[in-house]
Image (tube, rainbow, N blue to C red; front, side, top):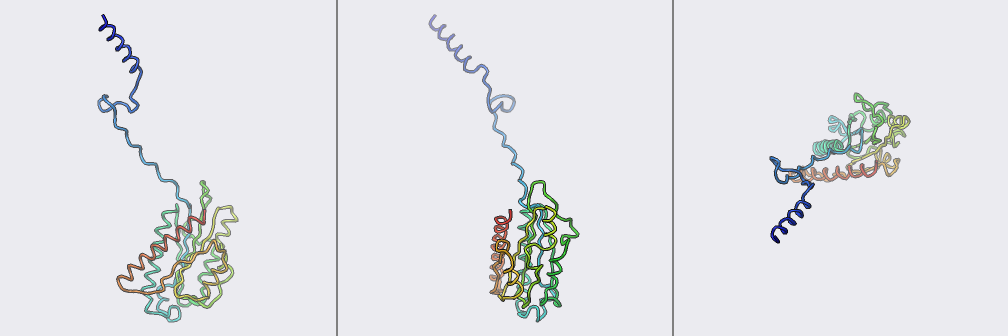
Length: 250
C-alpha cells in the first residue's frame, strides 16, 4: 500500500513539473531533442558617413615635369611623379570607403602655366566642377557633401593666389550652400622642398580647421628600400588625412 501511494505521488509531481513546458530552443532534427541555435545573419552595414565627395587634385602635368622652369631638380622627376600618383591612388581608395559617391577632378598644370597657376583660378570659379557627373543633392539621411582640394607640388611658386582660390569654398560649393545643401570644403597640401609662395599664402588665408598639410617626402631615395619606405610613408599620411576628415567634417 505504501509503495502504491509513493508511486502515485511521484506521478503527480512529475506531471506538474513538465505539463505545458516547451523547449525554449525548439525541437532538434526529426522533431526530437533540443536543437542547436541557428546563428543570426550579420547586420547589413550602415550608411557611409558622407553622401558625396568631390576630390579636386592639383599637380604638374607630366610634360611640365621636364621643364627647367617648372621642375628644376630633374633628378627628382620620376620619384616625385610616382609619389604623387601613389598618394592620389591611396587617397582615392580611402575616400571610397567613407562616401556613397566619389567624383574626381584632376587639374593638371601645364608648363606654360606653372608660374601663374591660372588653371587653379579657373577651377575655383567653375560652377559645375563635377561634370560629366551629376551635382550633389540634398541627402535624405542628412549626410554631408565634401569638397576636398588636394595639391601635390615641389617647391612653392613666387606668386599670389587670387582671392577666389584662397576662399574656404570655391564658387560651386558656395552655390550649393546657398541652395541649402549641407556641404563643406577642405584643403590639403603636400608641398615638398619648402618655400613661401603661392601655396603658403593660400594656406595662411584659410581657417585653420579646414586646412591640413601632409607630410612631404623631402629626402629622395630611389633604392628599393627607399621606395618601400615611400609607400609606407604614403600609407600613414593617408590614414592621418582620413582621420582628420572624419573628425573635422560631420
